Length: 605
Image 1 (tube, rainbow, N blue to C red):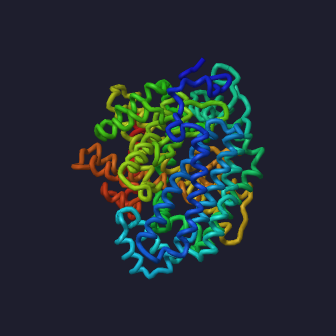
Image 2: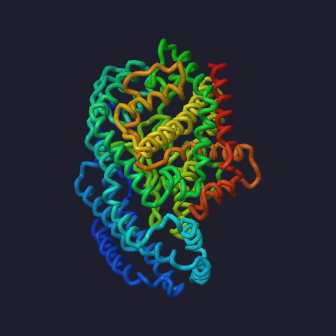
Image 3: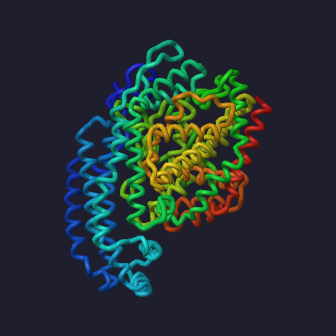
């Protein structure tokens, strides 16, 4: 019989046990597998069509425009094919049918990239002034203008036709480290059981592990931590090999694209100065006193002789750590985003009512939470909702992404609708900030206010400081290999331990398992990704302050930002809302606010 809530103990529910209203409606993407196969055939026809344009792009603006339009059409179809297969796979990673479909779609993506790989080298043979003149004579001049501008900027990093085709064909090989990690982490790893607060034996999952870390019972927190990381320790050599291979992949593309190093290559696409990355790390690390003090406050309030990493997530005020059903979470989130206006709220309500969200953890389902936009249909949000207030904030976070994707897709042509991660996390973390403000306004109880203040501090630790720590580690592992060194489980574990001790200070007692966390971070398989959580968080805090203060036209400017996709460089887009991330000011302001909140917590708790 279908259920609407997560199973708290015992077996993980099957897909069939969940009511349809809490499942994705993937028919919005493809009504059937036959429709998916039909698009697959159409993709191959468009691949064949690509050959007809090769060597002819300089002949006329019309030919060039038609070629770019053909590639765009094929890109949309290929994205749909891959997304449909992967979303189905992620609902149950044990089903081989969708693994096969995902692999077929990945192979197709590689073929598509190879089929159109002649475009950039051919265009760069055209004199810059002539190329700009051709673009000005396109049937629509506001579709590919930013692409042409970017192409000219990228000239020195685009190789010959033969090399570009070879790089396109390498996609299937270079995706292997990430695919291997995903299969191991989501499908093959089996976690042991522990006893919960009531003494019931419960099999660990990623979601249950996260929930156990919020337990008010130190024994449960420790048991969950030890049992969970024991699994990763057993596979440490494999996990080290997969991450090392991913770093080697990054270096391969860095050299192939003629960049100085992986960092400059990764930041080039969004035109982010390398100085922004180093400034983020150096600015944060110059003032870690507030973070050190927070560990001490936690230790005091929790009345612990020693505080470990598994004590850093549980609520300081467990009597206020109430559970929230998914339906109640939806209501709270919709109320919280009211300041962003009727259009924004109605779009989000429509998403909830029309099954954009897959809500509960089920057997074989991918872990965590994410939003995945789709230009043809609508965004799809994956949750593994477990009834905690933390998951309510995660829902607000992912729905911020979904609204960003939706508004950009509505406002822009496909070529400009894909926004940068550097901007993306602004929408998600601002929603979390609005939810916090909404809850603070509702409560009159000092203990509730303390609980919410603590939650905001924890959010800054997780989204800002932790991500900067991750970014420093990512820089370390890339620089080590770039200078001719090698990575091993022991060296990476030692580096992680050093960073933990630096960031969290002398009050945190170190165990042997916490330094293994590097082995289970999926974002490390996407080079220099995580730093953008911290920069976006700093930007969102600046915008939230403007929203709360009622700054003139800030809502209109914010919605303009969400509707701007990738039509300009992310640092320029943030300036729409008056935030300049090329300076250290937003990072320093975030740290200052955090330090003030820790001081307040220390006085009141």
